[in-house]
Image (tube, rainbow, N blue to C red; front, side, top):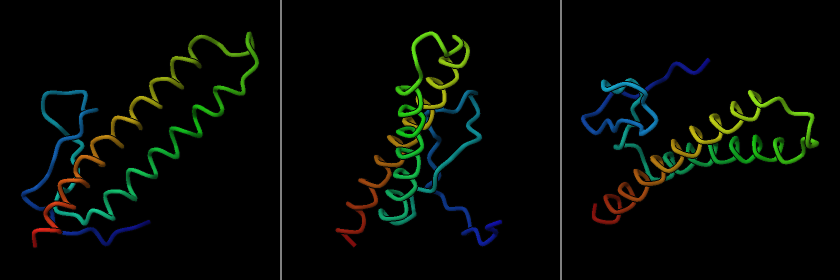
Length: 98
């Protein structure tokens, strides 16, 4: 288990996928653009894997609830990835100026 976490910064950005008014999932906008892009890439690849699995299911073999679960998981992963890529672009601008 990874336990070497950086000290939280003032650049904590709530993820769009937070289900509550008080955000509990935050990303650290002070991270490097590369770290943010790599995290986005993990989520994009996970969503792609889910959608590839969904595409390979024979019609009639998937339960309606399973399809909803696939779609919800893919949507959450893609939303996180979009938030991370936006933060990565901001970090790239910061890094270029600094």
